[in-house]
Image (cartoon, rainbow over all chains, first blue to last red; front, side):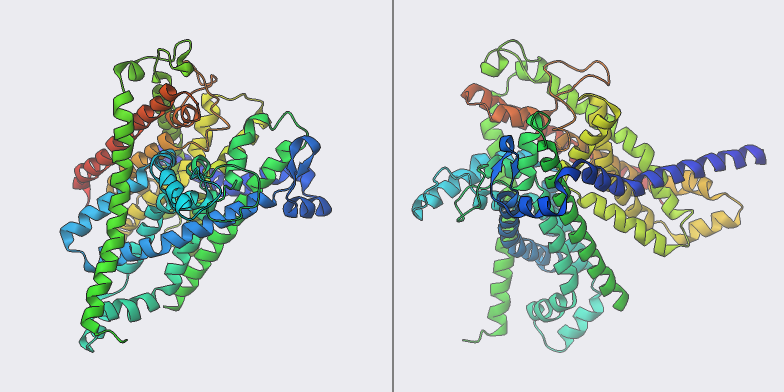
Length: 296
Length: 283
């Protein structure tokens, strides 16, 4: 009896450890496989010319990634610009002001939004956002009037990422003890003053961390962006100009990457850049949060 | 001009409510937009048939291959993910029960994994595929998606296991149970709603993800009959059909989007129901 129990326990513990090992190795394996594949372009002199050059013609062996990196950064930045007011206001409203029934239904709405796949967001972008941006572009006299632009991509991506950020922010606002709010209210502050001067100040590191993660999410968003960004290899010149972010580059060209020498290395290099950026942003945000909570 | 604090509060409420309303408007506009465009094109043929000759030029056929492929892919990936995730989540709360620093480190690495873009998982899956000499197949896609959804699953289970009271673990230990037994016999039951939510969340993610399977699934007009055959998925069907210049084919992309949206809505609604049903075992 005890022997079989011991044996079963042994099996369970071994399987738990194997599973944990697999999960822990996964990020390392992803990183190593990308480094291995992009090795031909990782030599010091090659790397810098490739990262900073704007010349992209795989057939001639020119892999300038700068337009893609620029597009990615600009799209993420625009996404952040739209994301901050919407997410912050919605999180404050849902956790502080909304009555219980409204808060509950708003949470369900955010849950549903969180479940919507990014290809649907892309489709919504094509149907709704792109025509909107196009009419805006006409109004401002831009040259590109199709509407497929980095502005459209930023808008779409900010909404596809916001449920994720919203959930984090709402958790943050709920973690504040009522005592703190009550004492501020007792001193004569209005509810809005409490939120503005006490909550926002107290939660600042957490809020910054949430948006840092949001930026890294927008950086990696692939299909939704790819469908509305226009996909033209150039450094974007204005809001209405088309762009070509890194994930889109990867997704659009995987089919032909084995036929041209070193093309696969260039694409894997772009995957490696994405991976590194996400890694850095995540670690930054998490350390910020951890540091802050240990001080509390 | 300095605002009176009452006017300021009123103004603030208004602005906050407006931005919150914007989120609702976006969801409504997505659903209305997709259904308005998709429902007219959605016919029984599209759901019940595989593409026939000339389908991509607007002739007969449907996307049954993509629907079935998506379901195979999502269920396969979720099954693999659950076999990997349940032990990890339980390990964190049994063997690592008294090592909060290690729990924190594992959580950090899971959160980082969660943040890695699907397209990078796709590239990794493709590298794995080349390494093992496979071709684009259902199996390669299943493995890639399983890796993608594992972190989400483990973190969701972890959250629900954190709610389980510590005294349960301590009393079980004092009664002479092994740690693994406590995990599988008590903790798992306590966090059953969490496990169910995690499974459905992962299923939804698996069905909806495009970027990670772009490299690995291949695309075919047939329903896959074995793991080594390529498979079509709904998001890929939407994506490819939308890039067609022919209006009929474009309309079918919207129809496919309606199907995908309905599947996702069913999953997210049933996850709510199941959570409520399963909560009865919780102490």
